[in-house]
Image 1 (spheres, one colour):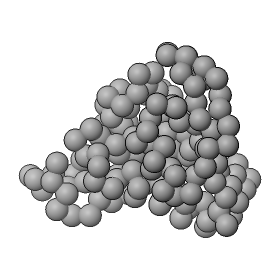
Image 2: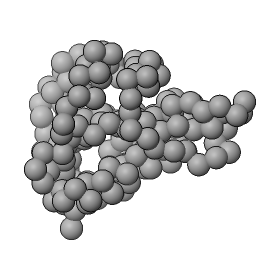
Image 3: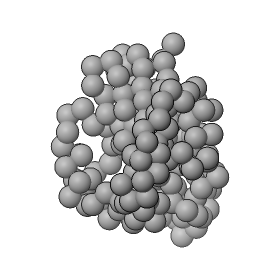
Image 4: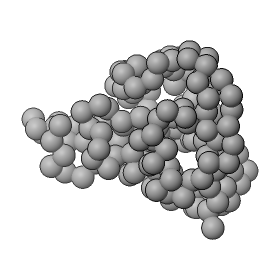
Length: 156
């Protein structure tokens, strides 16, 4: 993928879900369904975004997305994924930075997420932004019974 222009983050819309679901299926062993993403778009506390990157032919494509919830002064990262051919280009960092920016604007004090204990790339990404491991959910992932690390951060 050619990233001649800076990637742009925009709110996720129903028209984006075909591309989002393709990335989802390619990224996760138990992917969310199209109806689940559609339902997420209607939740008042849910924030859903896509990243568009430039293609060589002048068009743009969705190369990543994230969904997080803001409930009172807390956030919970639900989903984040980057298209395989766009990884290691800073898109995940761009998404996390945007989440933190929005959370600051909306008065969030702390946040959390669960991540597969084997997903070292994601764990390192979260640590880069101040997330720390604060717990473990044994057998959390139903597909593999893998443990989830609970990672948390404070906005301060």
